[in-house]
Image 1 (cartoon, rainbow, N blue to C red):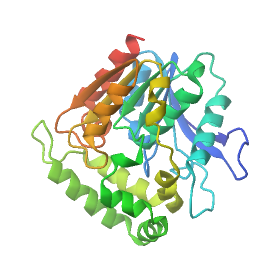
Image 2: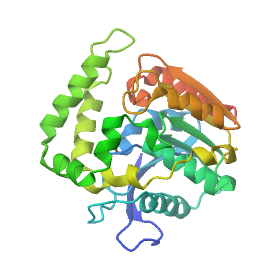
Image 3: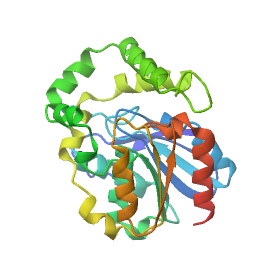
Length: 279
């Protein structure tokens, strides 16, 4: 696996270096994480893709992980999209990639396919965000006050994030009978990712465009996978998405929450590989 950090095309007015990994040889698959996460979201899927004949690329989005963190108290979705699309261009791929996106990454993948259909071979959307109404009322209210979110995140120690993550994981349980929904190493990484995310990214939902009116335009083959116990985004919204996209397969994972690609890898990874094989 290769770890890389390099500048993307300079389309923005601030540093735009991109931290990413790539592994394998074959058709390109680009993996896009969610809000306050990192490329480590895909630590299980990347080697699976490489083993099955694909080149997997996973990046840290703007403001996340080891990528550039502009000094701004209010990030905008267009910045993150431009950062992502410029990086994809910089890869010099000889064929269109499949984009795999979770939550915020699902939003970016959908918007990329809408804007650049000829550059997109297919989509895998994991509990994807595509409109603000998917969020519970309390979360929508908190995102209207990003300065409060930023202050809370900045002042909350990593150990407290870890306690919250552990408690949530225990409350969910696992369909295989385990006490935790998420493995220990993933819970540790999740807490770390929260603390190293630029606080300004919590403004991103405020600057998103409702993609609902554009879904019928997105005609690339798409797989939508979601957890039926997602408490971050309304599970019913994923059914609406499946109904609106023209060329789509939808799959529910029972007892999974917002991150089935991490909590239920034994079910999730084969779904992705089967979808890719049939493209």
